[in-house]
Length: 240
Image: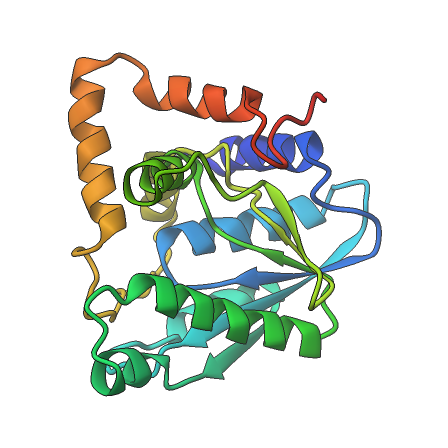
């Protein structure tokens, strides 16, 4: 995928759901994976021509696990001219050593989100951009249905009242394979996920299930994504 196509996806999502307003200061959550890197690059290029002026901060929440180096992300941020902050935490130690969580993803996500929100607030940001892509939308919907027994999915734009922060998801129209293609063709360094549960999660199970179903039902992802957009799920039907 070329940069122009990535920007077209992001611009459409931003416009459809009014994700960016004049004077916003947006913290980009950087895990170091392909999606967050795509998001950072896209928003930096969008910043150059978007009619509403906004600032960017890049933030990584480190789990404190061995093997993770963010030097490549720092170099990319230097190249793009975006201030970069790494928040050091003991989240990995707490989850895997102290609590020995068998299903650590939910607690880990909450703790990482809390650390990200706190740093964004300290940096004076009013919005946080998260790197959820189109596949993540469909997978989250199915995970809610299969594991929680409810129809639910994160919204394109949501508001955290306690922190007075908005979360936005500008990659929501970008298929995961196109994120991977963009990063590979751009020769951008990504950080290998050091999490001990990587590849052995409920999300991975759901991803594999959807891959199997897609072999039987044509355009499954598009159909489910379209249904979510037209649904009464909070924050999704922007035409209402």
